[in-house]
Image (cartoon, rainbow, N blue to C red; front, side, top):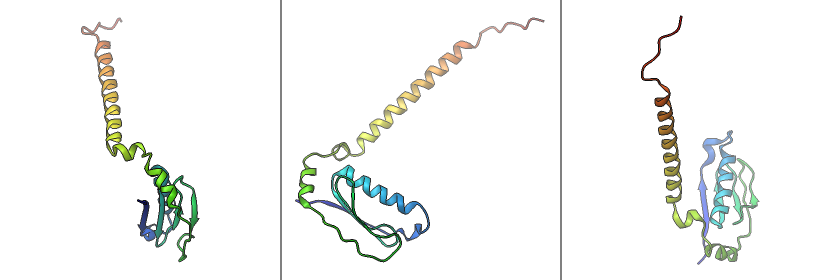
Length: 130
């Protein structure tokens, strides 16, 4: 079985912004993260063929009508399926567990801070010395 990522995007909304560059960077990251070929076709952004290791093999010009021609090697796809990434194995659970760890750490810090503040306030304030 052969797998690859294909992204069809309408980047015309972001014609003169950095969002087009961010979309290309996200596509490179997704290819490397999943270890799959990534084919990106856009109307006004960067159309690209990206290898499983995140290297851009072919790149079209920004906001111009052109054809991007690149070679996709399915044999590289087969090797990447045998070793899935953490995100492919566990999905969003990994992110949720990390978020819970951060929440517990912040809560622990807040409770410790409140105890320290509570202990620093004297129960019977001493009158000022004149």
